[in-house]
Image 1 (spheres, rainbow, N blue to C red):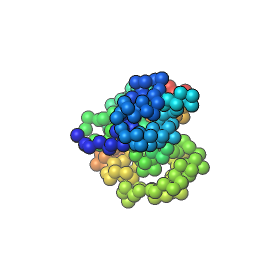
Image 2 (image 1 turned 60 degrees about the vertical axis):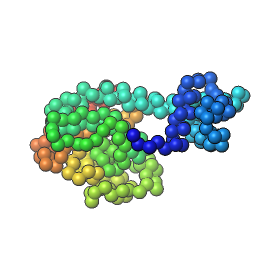
Image 3 (image 1 turned 30 degrees about the vertical axis):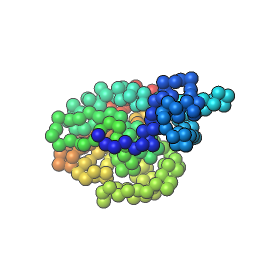
Image 4 (image 1 turned 90 degrees about the vertical axis):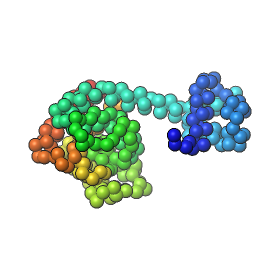
Length: 250
């Protein structure tokens, strides 16, 4: 088992404790229950309060679970329900192409994978649900970013360093904005070995939804299996699946 980071572990212990006491606890009660040093308990709880993960009642001085933790829970439920809604269509695409199909949502400047259907192939994409990757470097991520106005894309990437994962990775926000214009014009995004050598990806954005936010669906193909015919069938299958999922999201 990997070693725990003490401060992070203590934060999670405090959240567990407050979850069990919905009426809240004072700082002293938290410190006694956790048996942490007073100074570090104050620092941890104060940081959590500033970040919105706990909140203090001004009258009782008790701390309780805050709005950010509720938002995190809602995000998990949203991602889970979206994956369940999209799964039959993702499975149909996988069955038609026998390639990896993935579903992702946008979080800041990253795409987060919330669904995956694997093919019956020995050579397949090594990814997993819950992974977070920079949106500028993936097909899914660029499909997601294409749903935003250019001004918002520039705002989000202000000060972000564009890591060069391969020699095909995008290197600046100006280049990214140009690529997003092309994606909007043709309706789908591509990732030709921009994050992982030897992997080609096509991704379609889903219709933005008030309940689910921004999401996209993709197919990833190893270069050794890529062909014009497979690419054409992938575009057609994904376009149909994206339209069907988007209709369900309306």
